[in-house]
Length: 510
Ligand SMILES: Cc1cc2nc3c(=O)[nH]c(=O)nc-3n(C[C@H](O)[C@H](O)[C@H](O)COP(=O)(O)OP(=O)(O)OC[C@H]3O[C@@H](n4cnc5c(N)ncnc54)[C@H](O)[C@@H]3O)c2cc1C
Image 1: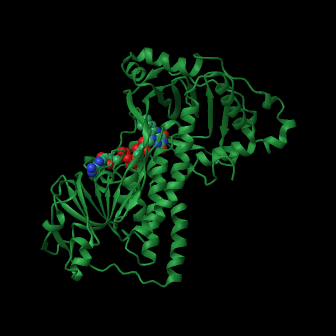
Image 2: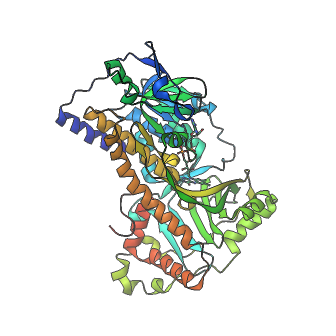
């Protein structure tokens, strides 16, 4: 109900400010200019070629129609204050314009995402979850995390925080299709898909129109986008949802910080003899391996290792790979953990355990064996990247264009959906008070909200990645203590679960 609640709050503010909203029909001037990186001196070369072409003028231009870009379009199409905006979606992905279908009986695609309850609520609000439910997806209510030393483990249960599920694993293509379908259901929403790539961009400004006529002033409030198709389009706000190598980020001149992990993630789908209903993650010396349920008898593997090992695991025979997976998860590297000191004395330590959650008494379980690999194996290099700014005048970044994180906790696209919700709400809020939706002060409200959330999550994931990469006696003991703490200390456990599932609690204690 995130979007709906915000919508109500904004509507109340509209009534209070008594601001009349008008979306006047506009006349548009096409500006012929050298733009973006190819521009020599666009100030001098800008020449106006006035016509009344309304088709290429939009309120919002979303560059990148991946999961996050389409989520923003969906959010805009669902909010009362933004559903009449004109939205351009620019992406050369040929399936965007089509009402494609997804084969239901084929084995799952290896590209999957673990979506949090907060993301599921968003999908329900925009009418997309009904489409996920028509395809393969797997809710899970239990999760087990442990490491190869055998010194400790943590089991999480949705009942620990009074919920029914911890999350749901869905193929990325199903998430994308569902958001697109929900968008197509909104017949009155003015969206236009440009099957092209952004090549360059000119962020108009009053300096380009020194004459200062009313028409000049109007044009100075639009950004110009040049597309690989040869089209030029114009928008009040350009949103970079074009992934980790964002062209919008580059052309707008945003700097980034971050590093490569010198790790690759191997992903693929495996089959079991029976259905897997738990999310498993074991930390090995080379990185974590996750076994995520994806419905029927299938699970998804996300296995992090160094690039040399990754290339060996990608090319080894299927039989050898299945053996390697079972060794990594079921019987290799070290002993299975047993219950701990705190577990044995849990009752006497109730002042620490703070009302023991149900999973405190759950013993360590051995994950189900894989019997077969049923998809191709894919490898992705891993990095942490954060844009120093998410916004500038007329530009906002969302999703992987603004930040990429280690996939060890399956948070990347969930953070991106959080960005899409926050930006849609900021735009609605701007409209409610009659402001230009490309103005920096308005966009800064979006940036402030999301930087806090994204940086906190990035710091936690990076800390985990580093803490679990060290194989040293004292660090191993510290890790064991952390596992025991997370298993037995009730408030800590509930806080971790709530945060990881998209709840608002601050990491550790709030
Ligand atoms: C191994 C692995 C496992 C993961 N598992 C999870 C998980 O379990 N849960 C989770 O939340 N996240 C997970 N993630 C992260 C998640 O996949 C990403 O965060 C997500 O895909 C980002 O979506 P996006 O729409 O921002 O970017 P992208 O998916 O990269 O989409 C960008 C779009 O922009 C388009 N584009 C690019 N350049 C241009 C241009 N110049 N002009 C126009 N269009 C352009 C592309 O065609 C593409 O459609 C995982 C990542 C990896 C690598």
